[in-house]
Amino acid sequence: MLAQDHVAPASSRARSRPIRGRPGARLEDRVLETLDIAIIPLRADNYAYLLRCRATGQGAVIDPGAGAPVLAHARALGWPLHQILLTHHHADHTDGVEEIHDTTECAVLGAALDRARLPPLTHGLADGDRVHVGAVEGVALATPGHTHGHLAFHFPAAGVVFTGDCLFTMGCGRVFEGTAAQMWASLARLRALDPDTLVYCGHDYAEGNVRFALALEPASPALNAHAADLKARRTRGQPSVPSRLADERALNPFFARR
Ligand SMILES: [Zn+2]
Image 1 (cartoon, rainbow, N blue to C red):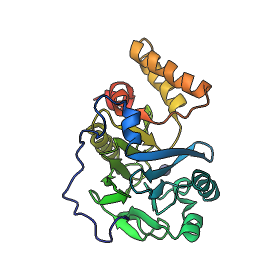
Image 2 (cartoon, rainbow, N blue to C red):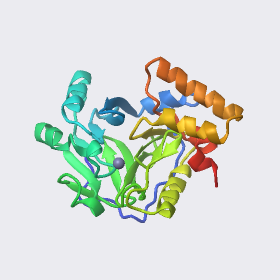
Image 3 (cartoon, rainbow, N blue to C red):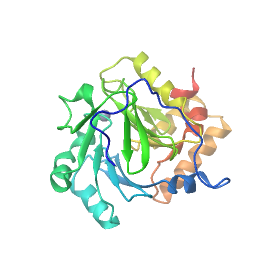
């Protein structure tokens, strides 16, 4: 089911809920019981994400910064694309929208506030509006600061949040349009989600971000262990996403310093 034309009122704020699934299952396994997620590296350091509802098979893509690689990836996996979810208007997150929409006739969802700067939207979203990838419900969280209309997409039942250019692994986005106070409030909002949430951000800046964090706190055993873990991932050719919100809360300098 696609998001509705008239979506839920903004009064219903996202609340983190326990992740459904088998008790004792690893977090990643519990996520996979709800949504399939494929990470697509694009351009220099962008990530787009393919989502597929395991119950219905319906699919979506978040922030397609290019069209052809996303379509090819979806085709290779056999995942359909019913909608595009956009966190914000920057070209490196939206350049693939036209080609994907023309090919699949999928819905295009993004911030109503930024409708004039986004590719043509079929559904404008406001804070708290619900989105659906098949049977999996998500909520659009207004997270301004990087841009005025920036949205994050939180899927509580799956235990995942897509943070665009607001929260990065061990860092945060640049404040281009909003104020530092707005960005801080947006980060605080994401920080308040369930610590077990997996964070999928819009860019792979983890290496530089960890270097910055270590410069602030070189002797931290937890930070050094986390840095080693991220480095090992890189060595194995694995992406730096997802990260665990619990790790970000403990170690991300933009979260840890209050
Ligand atoms: Zn951006």
